[in-house]
Image (cartoon, rainbow, N blue to C red; front, side):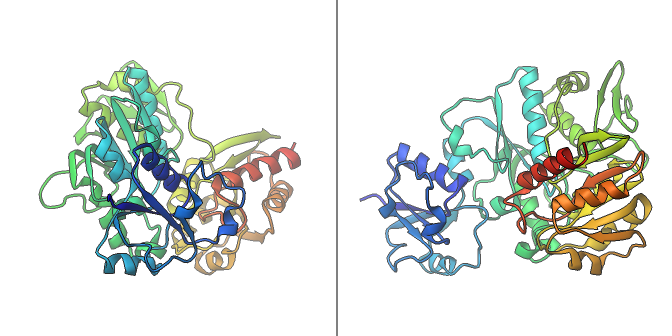
Length: 435
């Protein structure tokens, strides 16, 4: 009798595992820490509900289990992990299963910020050049959902939560976009977080990282960098490129140029060029392949210009590093909407930029007091009870050439399901109140 797989967590990842196991006639069980009432009207896609356990689990749940597949967001302090360890059962991820069946070349990307933009840029450029490829993983497309398709390259976005439990780290190219203070409520400190991120290089033919990251060598091999040097020279795949130049909005190579939005996206472009350099695509063709790339929504997205006042949606900002990038990207005279759900974060790091460029901070969310206690600013502040009231306050305090920026530096879970819902609420409020 073949052993069962145990899927921990119902959701996009868990259901993709269930669908895959069903297609392969692999027996499985599912356990989710939430109550069954949470899943009223949930589409279980034909899964036998007798194989799903909610909130509590029977003592024999782990009997005849040979592997546990964990969903990224599950609380690793849950008591089931003690039982799994006691039974000496291997814990893996859907990525590990995916790699058992995948023959495509994998380009793995992680980082605190910029992961989704990087894999989306890569997919766009590779398709323009003529390769078949797809971006999947932490961007919301489960890898197991595309396992039956054939691609030249697969761009695999990986979070620290996924890397923490992955056993198969093999990739053709591995990239880290940046490492900033984030997810410390889970990983305890930046050292643990960095170590998990750096594990992406453990079995990689080629290793790349932004030159903004410290401690990039693991003692056995050199990780090549990309980015801007202190002398404002451009590094691509470990080499300074003299013919590649940039200004505040464009990057130039001979007679080719490409517009970009913010220094953080310039770094993303240089990362893409570095990856293309590894597969022998020249810089001119790389820049050309990124022409007409549409940046993702909710990332310093200009949604309205009314009466010479610009309104920016940067709802994707869930940490200080991304809000810092937004403040650096936008001109002065900023009205900043800041705050959301609680997260262990060093908000003091935003103080200098706020004092330099922000005329008004509007606080929203459950962590407003937590942020205020850390910031060292002289900028005027006002509290708002909702996104709508924040927009109303912004409108009443804005003058010609001001920039209103929603960049919360916080998760959204106090008021919204996710950052997309928060961004949509901001866009709706601007459209209803400003026009």
